[in-house]
Amino acid sequence: MAHTPLKRRSRAASTHVGDETRQRLIDAGVEIFGQYGYEAATTRMLAEAAGVNLAVIPYHFGGKEGLYHAVVKSVGENIIELLDEEKSKAIETVRNENATPDEVLATLDGVIRGFGRILISSDLGRRAAPIIMREQALPTTAFDQLYEDHLRSIHEVVTFLVARLKGLSPDSEGAILCAHAIIGQVVVFRMMRETAIRRLAWDTFDNQKTEKICDVIIENIHSILTNKD
Amino acid sequence: MAHTPLKRRSRAASTHVGDETRQRLIDAGVEIFGQYGYEAATTRMLAEAAGVNLAVIPYHFGGKEGLYHAVVKSVGENIIELLDEEKSKAIETVRNENATPDEVLATLDGVIRGFGRILISSDLGRRAAPIIMREQALPTTAFDQLYEDHLRSIHEVVTFLVARLKGLSPDSEGAILCAHAIIGQVVVFRMMRETAIRRLAWDTFDNQKTEKICDVIIENIHSILTNKD
DNA sequence: GTCTATAGTCGGATAGAC
DNA sequence: GTCTATCCGACTATAGAC
Image 1 (cartoon, protein in one colour):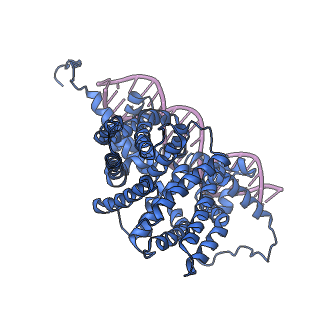
Image 2 (cartoon, chains in turn red, purple, cyan, orange; image 1 turned 120 degrees about the vertical axis):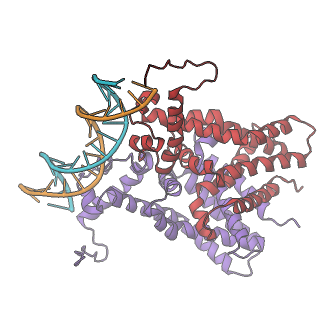
Image 3 (tube, chains in turn brown, purple, red, cyan; image 1 turned 90 degrees about the horizontal axis):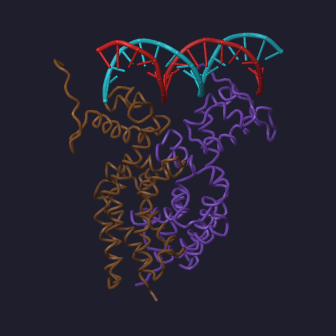
């Protein structure tokens, strides 16, 4: 460089050089941590995948663990973002005391199908799943943040809809347990994906198969939540 | 290989000195691999927890990875053993063409409740879960064996019962998908245990709470599989 | 079969030039 | 902010005595 460029100081949305480095590392981190797990992923892999120098990991994130935290946060935000529309609609439905059971059920269908699509067949789901599963199996300090910021709100939304349809309080054990079981029907297709694929002799869950899975789950949910008395 | 040195073949139940060492390492392995994950578990931890010398791990198992395989196998066997009674009963019910829907449903209840108890509140479930979850999230060569020897048979039993109640072929996609979703309702209470516990403000899943969870799941299953036409 | 001692490798983090 | 070079600790596996 001929003459020292002024460090571009941030006017509003101006991007710094380091910001891109940070983002590249986070993106690479989702991929590498997801593919190998936290311990098996090395800082050398992470740096190479991001196309940055090894030493910038401690510089920008304080170390491997700091990068991992940023990755978990990013994963949570990305998932929530994709569910945002369904979530808003659900909150609106819950607040509307005049919503009919059919409307509430249709809203729940939307949430479940959206959740299923992201989890089961999206690239984000594929990459994020091992990270989230690890935090569930062996929670680290990143789990608290993930739960408070993201997991809880999805769980609550489902619980609200279930509670409404079952005529229970959204704080009741019955509603929360039932909501958790319903969520389980979806997540099992990601968390026990290998088992499902072998049993079905499918090679993968493409979009069409994902819809079929969601159809079955939604049919089950209708059976569970439709009052037969 | 020229010829592999034969290990001393056990005459009946004669116990060798090394057999106890092997078993101690496997038991310690379930605990340590379960608690820390494969990579974070070190041979030093494993040896110390087993109360044996570090060098016997390569000697008896060929290395850390060999011990891990033995641990996965042991975990699968122990779970299956506890489910053996329910499994036999289920196979008997399925073979009996005169079994009534109520009988089939009752058999399924037994399988689900047995599975739930093991998975959710037993010590075995606690220790085994991270290991099985890891194999689902990031399958290693141990997964093939785990699936073929153990997971498949449980899945098939549930599928047979579901298929009978839905009037479907046990090979049909519909039956397998529905069975998988039902299994999901159980495993989610282990795999997303932390999330459930926080939502419920429970401190743990003791026996009483486990029964409550199983009650909800079984109620859901009845709704799903009871024909309302 | 089990022990001690150690080899050989690779990990994350850092110092200091630019 | 980014680079190269390097440190230091921790890991698995092995050699060889017993």
